[in-house]
Image (cartoon, rainbow, N blue to C red; front, side, top):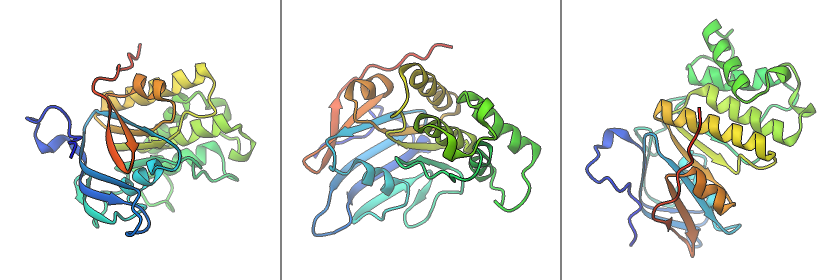
Length: 246
C-alpha cells in the first residue's frame, strides 16, 4: 500500500483540505474504477492527476466534489466528512463541459460564482462588493471587453476562461479543474495558469487538476499523481514547481 500523504507528517490537520482514507470510487461496486488507500491534500498545495483515458480521473474529481458517492471509505473535504457537505462556496469545480449558462452573459455567469462564495441567495440583488469581486475575476482572465457577451458567442478557449473566472470569483478553499487549460493558446494558457496559481498561493486554497499533458502537469504541480491499474500512485517524487513571475 502506497501512502500519498503530504511528506511533512508533522503538520497539523487544521490545514488539511482533502483527506481520502480507504476510498474506492466508481459507479458499480462489482467493478470499481480506482482505489485510494491514503491521500491528504493541504492548504496551498497543487496536485495534478494524470493517467490514460478512461481510468477514472474525472470520476475521482467528481467524487471529491461530492457529485459521485464513493463505493467505500472515508472522504473529508473542507472540514466536512461525507455524507455531510462542505459549506456553500468552499469548493470550486471546473468540469470539462464547463457548466456555463450559454444564453447568459459572461458577467452573469461569473456573478453566480461570486454570489456562491459570499453565501448570498441566487435570487437577491448582489451587493456592490460581490459585483466588484466578479468584475475583478473577469479582468484577471482578460475578458473585461467580453463581460456583456453571451457565452454562446465566445470561442471554446474564452468559455474556459469564463469558467475559471467564475471559480476565482467564488474564492473557494478548494479548486478542482478537469482539463481546464485545453483550447487555450500558449500565451493565454500561461496567463490563466499564473492567475490560478497566484490565487492558490496567496489565499492558501488547494488545487487539484486533471491534466493529460504530463510535462505541463509536472510544471504546475507540487505533486504529480498517476492513476494506473486501478490505483493512485506518485508519478514523480519531486516534480518541478512552476515559478510564477509577478
